[in-house]
Length: 286
Picture (cartoon, rainbow, N blue to C red):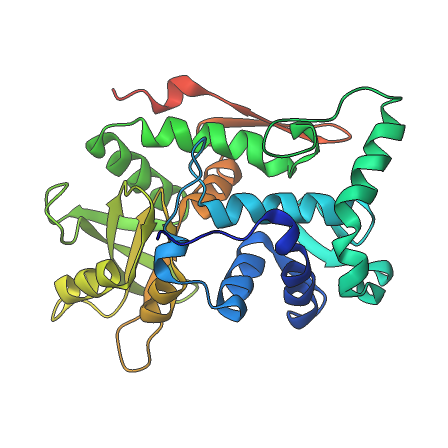
């Protein structure tokens, strides 16, 4: 039988424990990594994608877990996507967490004065989910719709915006090896970094990290792997394995943040609430 992903309500308690264990605050990625590690989710389970978007099923359900926890005041989040546990959240018991879905739906019902909050498969209106979800989903769909060469050009421009210089292409898209090398300057020192840009579907496992490192052998001491997908916990461990050249990983979620930071294909309007607007024409191949 295929692996079964825990429901959002089954992930609320692990989410709270993860934030506590990480010092009381954590990013989406840190929460997901911690939950995956503690709950022992298999690589097969981590690779299951949500049917309506570029996120894995685990990531999608963790979004809803955070939404419910925030809705009852157990956690809060900043504009930078950092989640913090509240005093109420610290004091919750497993029994109280199990009662949160019913409590939250009642709060929504009262807030909306009897209007329906039901949405098939979720139980609450989608406007209550993480603020990052809508614009990141749209952005990732635009990026994954680019051609392989278009995605490579996008990644290279991003590296240049981030301060990489002397960029040189070393291979062809789709060859399974290194796409290029660039120099990153940090204060008074600079060093070469080999990079690979791939539009993978699903999750990227440790094999892809090992293959990339193998292609680097004898050529460089540090690599950068950029993808629209997600990396499994095993892939992240492999990327930082002791005794092996380190490989930095940029997944789809981090890629969205970087594109927003450098205003590449998105326009941010700062009002009382930050509004991030997608610019689809940016991702049309020249």
